[in-house]
Image (tube, rainbow, N blue to C red):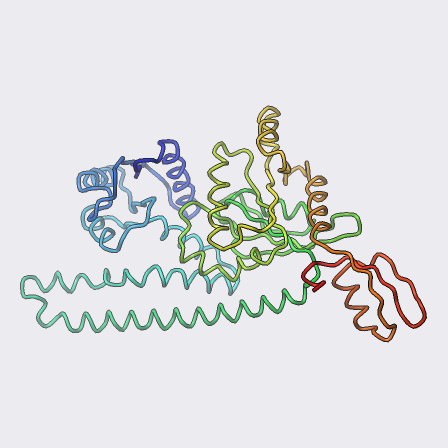
Length: 398
């Protein structure tokens, strides 16, 4: 549905994206409808007349499901299903279904189940509307009590399960924190970006390690960390994270917070953008908004335009002029990767401080730890002391 202040091209882009989401979920899109309204209709979201039009169209094309590009209230969903006589799904429900089918690890499955339960909790009443219809004009005598009792049982069970899942994710978060402590002193980068921007392909190209790749929205949900050799005798850890998207459900972001914590903890964000997408600026704005929601807008960020093999020379030069500090690469061909590694290295060097230390030789354990978490550039001996020059992160230098 188009609203005032939203251009026609923006609306068409989001509907095109909805079609891609439907395809990812296994549906076949047979038609689409767009309505221009000042505000959503309280009962049907799109208005009664448009709902009737959608009903007639659904019957004509024999559609089994009608998917809305915006979130619907439980009442709107119920009213639309009664009017259209088809299964009604909103954008959040569609994304949750995709995440459910793509979750592979225990952590991802836990995150998705939590998001689904939070989404479904206020919608449980829909399952019991048949009781009120059966009651007719009698006011529900003899039926209202059992219905309400069962509904409350369902709600309590859902809340209990939500609490259990939240505790499980808290445990996972603590395990991640332990893992991060073991990697202290190692410079960490995180690939962030709109879904299908090519982050996984880029990680594979940077690291040379196997990474799951598929040309579809939300191909990967779990964060994947690989060691990347920059040259200059330096390595960094790079993490690929779940892709962002317009209108990403807030409860989904909350559920995936433990995974996205890798982004929060990164020393440098690599914001990957699909250079071949016409309205790339909207993707950049969407990712920036999600990062703001995560509270990491102040994190050092390097803009990386990927898939430059798909654009012509003139378009590439226009991008270079508009974004002079960005890096332009192709994760598919490897073009521009040396420049990307060089830029990461310069950020790494800028994030470290140099310390000149004098330590007793008896402090062998401390000296070994300095070698582990930093870069010892010179070693000399004076009496019983070891003179070290160490490049180390500002955090570890405290």
